[in-house]
Length: 286
Image (cartoon, rainbow, N blue to C red; front, side, top):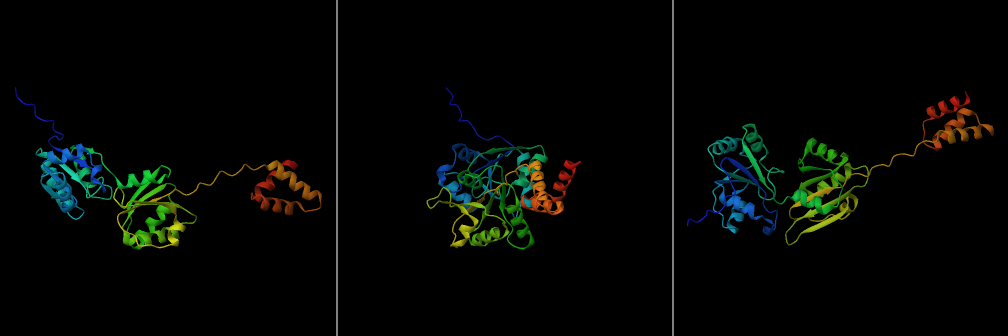
């Protein structure tokens, strides 16, 4: 009796976008491992980093560098291999590809050719930090912010002015500078969550505020995700009780105050439009 062949996880001509561990290798799924083992090639951000992962799992699939500096050169090569029937896997150094990592342009090009893309879900630093923060959805993922100049200042302003929770990545040597800049842009206190070295031995979560975290500068180390809480929403103002304000104006007038002065005082005291209050009082007189 012939032995049944083990099932294959890959199909010809498909690009598999594969999430890899952000720190702890035990977070990797059996399916992700199988796809990398069965693929005809692995497109990786850094062959040295992916090589360590493959070595740990005894995967000997050929690797091809695919990073920010060779994307335009690689895309035609990858498209040709897919058309020829190769099954290829795309990984980044850590986490889900395309989230601040190469891959978005390649995937777009494949769809433009009516090709096929599928995703093997895996860990994501942004989603992991957001899940631990306890902050409200919706959120915006900003990735890495520009390092300097007007583009940096503009992005920081966008992050602070956004009405939504914001998630961004930051390098440890820029961390304190970024925190100070965010605080300078903010017009009110903002909650902030710092996730450092997630899933690793020295994982650290810190939920505080921009003011508190900048009061005591520290030397930051490791890979960091910042989650910035949404600004507090102002409660809807109480509806204006124009009838009551009209009554108070008339009482002041009855005690000898000129009507215009009475209207000005009551409008100022209750933070309403002097013109609107005047119109209401005059209309009541008619």
